[in-house]
Image (cartoon, rainbow, N blue to C red; front, side, top):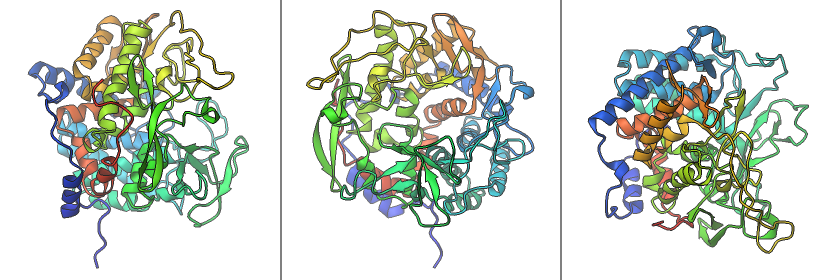
Amino acid sequence: MRRRSVLAIGGAAAAAAAALTAGPASAAARPEDRPLSSDQRRLLTGYARDTWRSMEAMVHPATGLAADNIGGELAESTRSAYTSPTNIGCLMWSAVVARELGVIDRRTARRRISAVLDTLARLDRHECSGMYYNWYDPATGAVLHTWPDNGNPVYPFLSSVDNAWLATALVVVGNDDPSLRPRAERLLSGMDFGFYYDEAARGPDFGAGLMRGGFWVEQPPDQPAAVKGNYRGCGPDVWYTGHHYGTLNSESRMASYLGIALGQVPPEHYFAMWRTFEPVCDWSWQEMKPEGDYATHLGIRVFEGAYTYRGLKVVPTWGGSMFEALMPELFVPETRWGERSWGRNHQVFVRGQIAHGLDDAKYGHWGFSPSSDPFGGYREYGVDAMGLDSAGYTSDRERTTVDYGFAGCPDREPKPEPASYGDGVVTPHAVFLALGHARSDALAQLAKLRAGFDSYGPGGFYDAVAVRSATVAKRYLALDQGMILGALGNVLAGDVLRDRFAEGRAERRLRPLLGLETFGVPAAQ
C-alpha cells in the first residue's frame, strides 16, 4: 500500500471535522475582514517588497541559507556568521509570500526554496529525532561549536520550538509547490516531535504531558538543571532542558501543534498546558491572581483562567509580548478554528498592547515584543501586566514593572502603579502581527513610526525604536522580517500561509481540538 503523505489533503475527514466544529456566522464582519483600499494595498505591498530585499541580502550564495541578521545598510560584510532552523524556515515561507505578492517570480521563488532544501538534506542533524541543531554556519552549513562573535564555546543544542518553525516552513512549501513536495516531505517525515514529549511532566496520573524546551547530545557543563533521558528510547540518552514549555499562549505552542498534527504527540497534550496558573498560593509567584472556572476536555481538567488588565480579560503569554501571542497564528487559523478561545483572546491581547503604549505608559506608540535592543544586543520586551512571569518582559529600557499582588497569600501585597515609564522600545514586527486584529490602528502606528523616526531603510523598517530617545536599532533580523512578511502575505494574499499550513493533517487533527474550548474571556469586551 502506498504510504500516505504527511502533507496530504484530508478530504472527507477534514470536511467532516470542519462541519462539526464550525461556529455560527458572525453577526457582523470585523473591520479587519473588509477589503483593503487600493492605497492600503499599494502601501503594504511596498513594505513587503522592501522587507524581502533584506531577506535576500541575508542569504549566503554558497548554501542558500539566510543568516540570523544583517546591518541596516544590507552590506554583505555585516551579515551574521550564524543561523538557526527558525531563520531557515523564515526564508522559505517568505519566498512563498514574495511570489504571491508579485515581488519575485515563480522561478526565483522555487530556486530560492530549492537551494535551502538541498542544503537541509546534507546538514548534520540528530539521527534518532531527525531534529536540526540550533546554530549553523550559513556559509558552510557546519554545526557551530564556537560562537563567531566572541569565541565562546557552543554546546550543540536541538530546540523544540526552533525545529517547529522549520517544520512549519516544510509543511507550507510541500503544500504550496508540487515540484518541491517530495523533498520537503522527506525532510519533514524524519522529524519526530515526540522526542521532546515528557508524558509524566504533570505527574504519572494526570493524563497528558508537556514538551521540553530541547536537548543537548552531550552533557552541557553550564546547564546543571539538564535532565538525562530519552523519551523515544532511540539511540543514546540526551540531556533535556530542565524546563518544559508549560504555558499555552506562547510561541512554543507551535511545537505542540506540529507534534499533534503529525500524530507524534497525543491531542490531550493541548489541554495539559496552562492558560494561567491556578489561583492558589502555591502559584502566587505569577503576575496576578487569575479568575476563571474549571472545565474538562478529552478527560483533562483545565483551569480556564484569565487576567484582567485595564478592564480587559485576557489569557496572558509568558512575557506579555506580541510574538508569543500571534506568531503561531500566521500559520494555524486559530481565530477561525478556535472562535470561542483564540478568536476572542487575540483581539483583546492586541487591544491591551495598544492601551499600554498609549494610555498606561503614554509613549504615543505601541508594539512590544523581543527584538534588537536599540542600545546594543537583543532583549525581550512586552507588557508586564499581560505576562505570567512576575519579573515580566517590560516595555521600556528601564525595566519598569507592575505588581498587582495576590490576594490572600503572604508576601504578595499589591504595590503602587508606576508613576511613569521610561524609554519605551517598540518593534515594527509586533505592529505587523496586529494587522489581522486591529488594521486601522496598525496602519496608523506604522505611519507614525516612519514619520517620527529614522526607522526605515533599504530593507524596510529597522528592527526596533526607543521612542523617547529616538534611538533606532538599525539592523534586520531574519525572524522579525519573516514575521512581517508572513503577516503581509496573509493580509494581502488571502491567508496564503494559513491555507498552505492548514491543508491536510493540520486541519484534520487541530481544528476539532481548538473548537472544543471556551477561554475565560468574554465574547464582548
